[in-house]
Length: 535
Image (cartoon, rainbow, N blue to C red; front, side, top):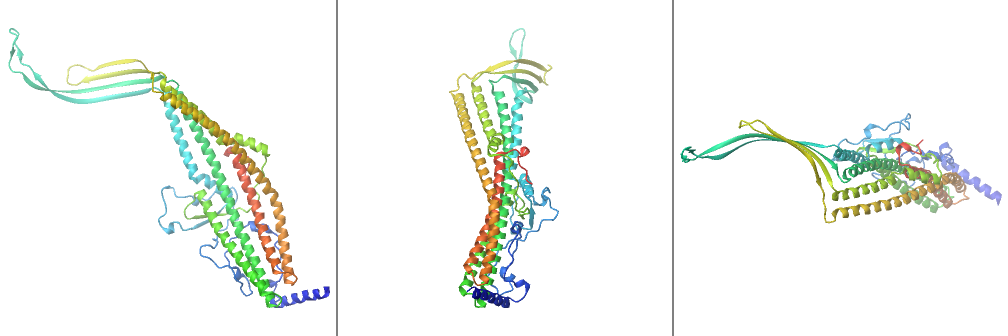
């Protein structure tokens, strides 16, 4: 039996050699893929797999309109991670401009960028971050307005007028008889007046309102500063996450392309065996079905890749005619230096959200003081100087002055001030509750990201070995099938196992980088106090 099996194997090899020819490019056994890292350097190809074969064309993937992967321009060889992002990627300076013609949204610039360049573009163009900076400038003006109450008010008012009126002029009186001689007459008198006043006033005592308003504006300004810091970290996190998602989409396209090539080779083997009389039509049909399934997965992967590119462009707010591709290779981004407990404590110290809740509590306390100031005495100092002159009389300018203090005290307002104070008290309670909820959420976020980081780190080596095993398994399955001692089912199952192993390997790397990005975001919210730097 062993001799018969050996002769059968030799005969099958001879027949396959006759069918395929002696060309070195038509070997029955393909060399194993020993460097799966090549998949990390994603090459976007749009080649019909059937046209790559010299044998009769098997059913291959048909090109679908709009689904062919775009041909990105390759990154220059001298591109460095610290190289600034190209300025031609920025959007229009007019935020109200929007395209009205199809050619205005047609992709003209396909630009590969690194992760650091993506972060730079996001921090420069993100609309939410820009809005937060504008709000910060407004809060600075509000603080200046509140501080203006520390200085006295000086005002002046000047009036110039010309007036006239009709008057009755009585007749002349006889000094001896006392009788009026002559008829009374009507006259018209005109006068030109110039008057003005200058007033200086200052609030000596405001019941605590002035100090509370200034302190409230200071806390509101600090809140805006923390909001800019929070959104800057959030923008950095979103840009990094979308970049990793694009890398994952690129990897899935490369994996799907490799699966199509493997399925094509299996189909070619089945066709050759069928032509040699050693295979069946059933094996060929199964290979065709497997190739069609691989083509469908490639089509879906290309669609997901284009969506990932557009999502990255949205976060970075680049121009309408720009499409971005990932220039960095897929690899581990770095190591996290802290333990879980140290990470939790550091997050409590650094996260802006916690300090914002404390500031909101202080703002509500100042609102309570402002509300109660309405039923407290208000003491003002004033000094006035006024003058008046009638240009039509013989007198000169008349002037005068006055100064003093006035007190105003609302004795009863129907309970409105106390009602506003109670509202402020409830806002303090809400801020306390929000602080506790945010504290618990931060710990959950840090723990979840840390556990996922550890799991993905362990999975990287495991999946790397699985890829090597799956490659060897596929190689042996093909050898057995070509020798007639294996089945097409073994080859197809090995191909699927290899595709799944490759996907799991890259998913482990991408997942590790995403967990590292999440951990950095959840622990440190200060751009100047970053616990981790990308390498």
